[in-house]
Length: 87
Image (cartoon, rainbow, N blue to C red; front, side, top):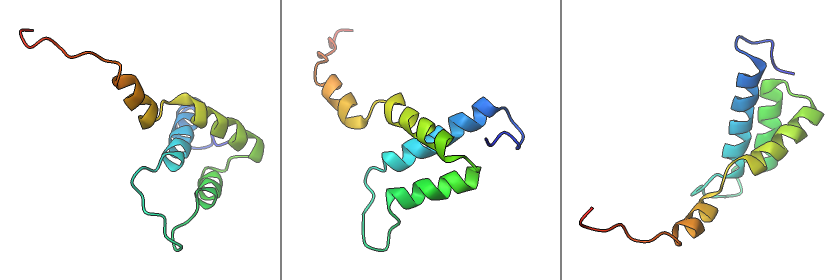
């Protein structure tokens, strides 16, 4: 995989998953014709880390499921009640 650099494999995997997650959830980014697509960015990161296709697909699935998206967080927050002013 990509454990040839300093640091443990788990650290590099975590960084790789974070990069994939960031690509997946680019919020507020303008998508114009000159911007790279998500697929272009995934290939770039995969090549930069030297990750095999099998590992990339496994870690991409992990990135999709690992964190809660902002819309899910907001919908959960709607169920919260107000805090009492008196504390």
